[in-house]
Image (cartoon, rainbow over all chains, first blue to last red; front, side, top):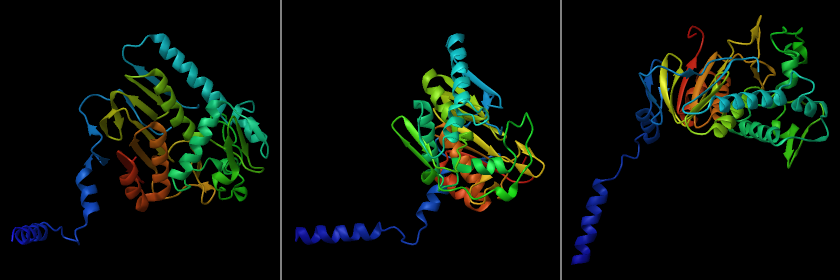
Length: 60
Length: 257
């Protein structure tokens, strides 16, 4: 009886937590992790700052 | 190098920065194709034969092969014949030579014309290597490692920050932490209708719809490769490539300059 109960409870839990298989996971993750500041796309490993720039990247 | 460079550091003696400048000048003299006596020119001149190369040149040549793979062949150091065909035979300070565009050809796959093994390298007969921005990015990374923490090395826009540094990037300022940045552009080093950035698929100056790309990555060389690859991919392919490889990026087309 205990085994049957545990199995049914597991089935209900799993069913209720299934992800939507049609959800576009990767694009959502990419979009959520990139912000745009002044036309610059910025990922989570970099952040804009109000400090004056000490040097710059530029075309040469 | 035909460009301006800056070395910044916190809490370091001035002599260390002067030594850094000496290193940059020394490496640039070995990697330039504009001096017939440079190590790179001698390697190109002995095409078809194995030639002894320094550890530094060997490392840059291997970096060029890595860049080729990372860029799906778009960053190809074997574009030297096309560079010569468009008239970029000497420094632009001396002025371009007459272009012979009919001699421009798509660049061969780099691994087919460049081999590197312990202390030696071989360029295939008829081929030629131009290290260009690959050398700048590599040197920025190398010098930053030598100088150590709390420095930033900027070699003509290819830069590597050690520690946290506010760095101008397009119209904004980013705080880079142990990261690199670079810009690839067709707006500089141009004359008439021609410019220096060769599309290896055609052997001619690139016309992709993008004119300038800046990228942030883990290092200066990686940023250089990403920026140039994105520019060559053009406005349709660049966003996805940058999203997959860059930590931050800016794409500039006509009217963004």
